[in-house]
Image (tube, rainbow, N blue to C red; front, side):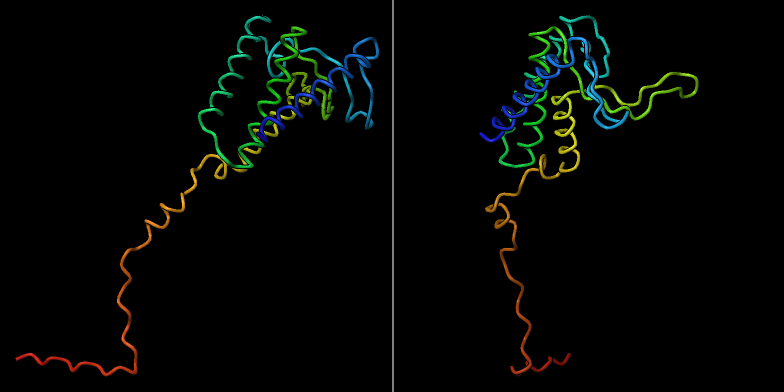
Length: 191
C-alpha cells in the first residue's frame, strides 16, 4: 500500500509543477533565473523520449511509454517484496512514468522546465549542452534507479526464511572436550 502512496505523491507533485510551468512560463516568459545562470526554470515541450530523441512520432513514443509502464507494473505484481528500498525505488519509477505518460496522452508531449545550465559551449568542435532540461517525473525515475543501484542487495536478493536458517544449522553438536578434572583413560599399549 505504501508504494501507491509514493506513486500518488510523485504524480501529484509532477502534474502540479508542470501546470505551474505551463501557466507561468509557457505563455511568453519562457525562462525564470533562480541561481545566476546555473539554475533556471526554462519551459520546453519534449515530443521524444529522454534527451529529446524521437523514435518515430507521437504515437510510437506514447505506445512505447504505455508498454514500458505496463511491463514495470506487471513485474511489481509478480515480485511483490516487503522491503522499504523496493517500495521506494519502484514507487519513484512508476510515479515518474505515470507523470510523463499523463503528459503524453493529454498534451502529446512532455513538459520540461528544470534547467541546470552547467556548461553550454563547444567541445572538440561540437556545440554541447551538458545537462538536459527535465521535470519532477524525470527526477523521480532517476532517484528510483539510483536507489536500485545503491541498495541492489536489499532489493533483489531473496531473504533467507528463519525456518530455512534454522534447518541449515548443524543437527549434531560436536563432542565436548574432556575437562581437565575428569580422569583420563590410560592409553592402550600396542602388543
